[in-house]
Length: 177
Image 1 (cartoon, helix red, strand yellow):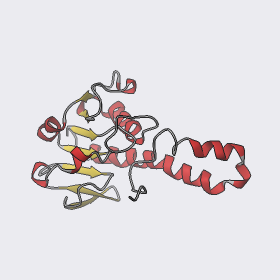
Image 2 (cartoon, rainbow, N blue to C red):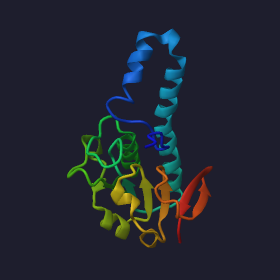
Image 3 (cartoon, one colour):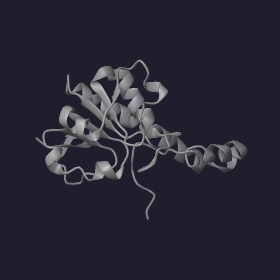
Image 4 (cartoon, rainbow, N blue to C red):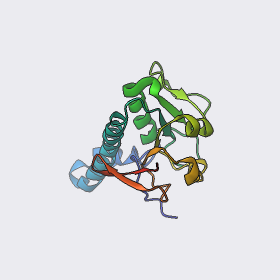
């Protein structure tokens, strides 16, 4: 299994945190570790910027952020880049944002007062115009192309390679319509 897959950042309670302990204990001997963590930490901000540009290019579009966990098929949101990205998008775009996370029954505290709602995947596919894939949960992977027709898709996990490409904001985005 290849664990090195591109996405909106690195999360979890080990990989996202432990390297900083190593850097703190030997700062002069760990420039590569520091650089790697800085690059991964900045990836979240890159994804937020690209998602923001895409949302602003589609005024009034309903947005679905797919996933909050730090990796696929778990209910652990610790140090999750997906959670960070979705919360920032919710704070900026409010009640236009829905979150789909099959491994929880309520949104985390940072979504309070944003207007964002937790919905199921079927509802997102029926009501949202823009899909931002942040976690590669199996339930997201199996959504057929026919159910994504007419949606603008920002696929940060590469789970839908059959989605026709559109270039926007200098990055490959996916859209059918």
